[in-house]
Image 1 (cartoon, rainbow, N blue to C red):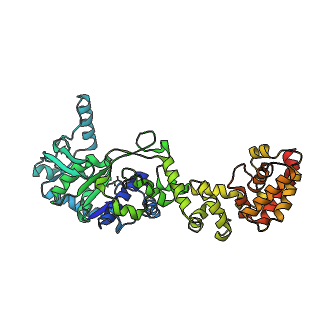
Image 2: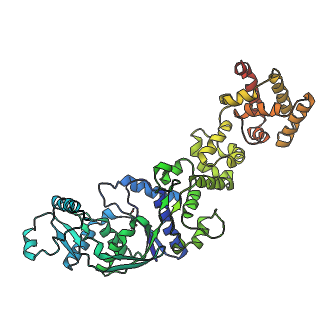
Image 3: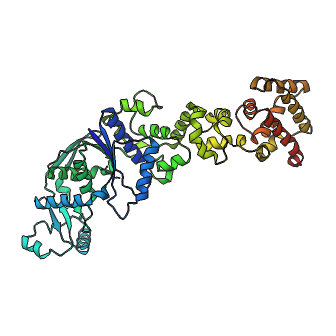
Length: 470
Ligand code: GLU
């Protein structure tokens, strides 16, 4: 068994393409098949080498491996030409000399007559003499479509039936010698012994053409699986309107590859039960293309964010640090200094970028901490504030050891001895330590910062009070 992922490098790796790659990979792994990566870069107008590299990088980032490739179709142009001429020689294809102008005129005429345009077949039956006379003319190679039914069993859609009568003699080779997609994809699937073609639903109408070509080449027709569309939250075809569409954009906001992989594999497939967090290895033991849903899947960004949060929560600080580091910036402290801070904050964010953001108060220098103005307005109140903060400083200076239990005890004992609520100390303390009105449990914050920085930040607050409350 061999499957393949065959992206055209005309842009970033689309999340729909990534899902196609994942389904191919999982099916191959489940059944001990091989996975091929083929870059379909014969469209010179639209293909770019850097897109091919980006796609390869994104696949690697996502953990989508392959056993063969990447093979580039642009390295194989000569072979497509030969195979096209082979069909001409066998009378299964022919040279077509119609000019763009002629074809356009036919199209306009069909439109005027209110008919669907079809290629006239003009060049199908040229005599040898007529062909001879045109030897110097530019031409394309067209496939001779013979009428009759084209049927196949699709792993997802079941039995599919087309009538070849409705298919025009399609082009295999352009006048510039480049193959069309139909030719190169079939030649390669034959050459590379692909046995299962799993690709997007948008290719369904191409499949009868491909089957005719496989037959013309006297090759085995592979099994097909056409994957349902992915819709955006607006129930329209997934597009930029409702969010990012490339794997790279999700990487850049700090989505983990494991989470994106998990999310994408559930677009049209479920392992059974209500389980949603499922690893690649588990999926590779359960997946089968024939279990994929026929109905379109909806790409729910909120669910992806939730899932990413779940993955982050389950990772240790040591696992998170290397992937988080790029979001922390070049001056980020080393892992040893951040282990506690990461543990404290990891369940408070849904992306690595957000996690870096909620960790920011812990990363800045004590005198670089900025206060949110809302929180200042709300919590820096009362003539006795400076006094409260000085008392708190000395209470925390002598809390022994400096852990969550004894810092909390020190604060509460102080509040009680002054006849005040603990909140009168806790809220300004939170502002002093984080600059914010919300944070992880405040005594955890103090401990993560350590005694020295906690006291220094309280001193900052006291020093800033006159300017802040003026
Ligand atoms: N290169 C095609 C695409 O990117 C896929 C071809 C195929 O899977 O047959 O849409």
